[in-house]
Image 1 (cartoon, helix red, strand yellow):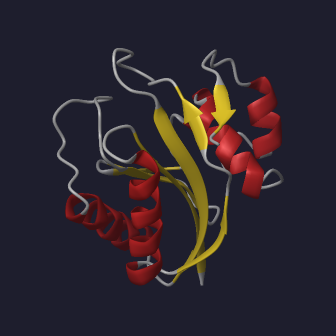
Image 2 (cartoon, rainbow, N blue to C red):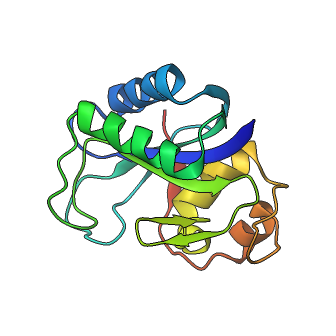
Amino acid sequence: MNVAYLLTGGNTGNRLQFLNKAAAEIKKHCGTIVSKSCIYETAAWGIKDQNSFLNQALKLSTVLFPHELLDCLLQIEENLGRIRKEKYGPRIIDIDILLFNDDVIDARNLKIPHPELPNRRFALQALNDIAPDIVHPVSKKTIAQILKECTDPLGVDKFK
């Protein structure tokens, strides 16, 4: 059995509803959701002139291999109505693979661990809720350590 850590997020439509729909589809098609982080709200990263995002980290137990999981997650995004228009632009749902076991993958269409994870406080904060002691396979630091060292200035607030 494989363990993947995912980050779901979105900033258009009913953001909370789309996070919940994404989790339900992941459970249905990809494996067992073992744990979920709190839901966090943060300003948009990249293109700043857009609605703030809701994000949640999920720990997934799956029989899928990394590329199979990626294909499954992309299909879920598409089924939920995601249309890819511009990088860092508004989106109904985004599902990223942050970590997969202790794997390091550098393929054209898949990078694990997620290359921007150490630079994004919103992803680290959510991941820290469910996996503070997991060791990043490249930096060899725990998620809690990486979060403490993160220089991303964007605020991350628990969503109420």
